[in-house]
Length: 284
Image (tube, rainbow, N blue to C red; front, side):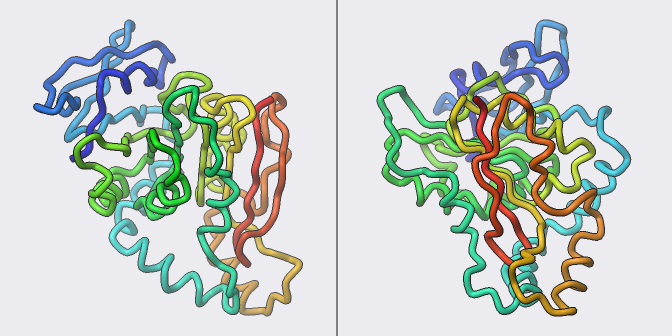
C-alpha cells in the first residue's frame, strides 16, 4: 500500500504558491494518509487518492507537455519491455550499457547518518525501474526515504505495482504526481536527486534543472541522464539513424551544461551508454 504520513506533509509545498500544505482527509489504520486533500493557505486544493497526492497544476502545462503525457499514457504498459529489449539492440554493441552506471554517480554509500533519515528524489520516475537499484545501492543506509514523482498517472500506477514490496508496513517509498517544472517540495529537502530520460524534451529545461537544484541540499549530487550520442565511439550509420529516431521529439541532445543554474556548478559529464550522457551538478 502506498501512503505518506504527517511528517511527510511537512516537506510538501503547494506547486502554485510554494506555501505549506495541510492535510484534510482519512487515515489508514497504520497512520498513513490515504484519501483526501492537501490544502494551502490560499485554498489551492490537491487531491490524494490511494495514498498518492496529485500535485501537478495541469493548467500550466504546454501543448507539448499534454501531448507527451498522452503518448506516455499508451506507452506505459510496454515502456519497460522497450527499454530492456529494444534499446540494447539499437545501441549494439554496448557491453557496458547499464543503469548502474548512473546509479553509481549518486554516491549512495558511506553516508553520515547522524543528521537523520536520508531522502532521495527521483524526478520523472516512469515505471520505477531505478528504484530497486537505488535501494540496493543504499542498502547500508538504515533510515532511507525514496520519493518519486512523475507527471503521468499511468506510469506512477505501474511504478507502485512494480515496487509493491517497498510499499508495505513502514513504507520507504513515497509517490506523487508532479510537474518537474514546479516540484512540490520545500527548499533543500533531499540528500540526492536523480532524473533520467526527460530533460531534453522539457518545455523549459533550465527551469527543470533549477527546480532540482532548489529541492536538493547544498553539495549533494544532482544526477541528470538523457540522450546524447557518444561521439568517442565508432558509431555506424545505423547507430546514427537509430539515435535520430530516438530523439525525434527532443528539444536538444547532449548534456545541458549551459542551462545549469548560476548558483550551481557542473561536477562531471560523461556518456554512460552509447546513446546516453550523465551530468552531475551540485548547488553551492
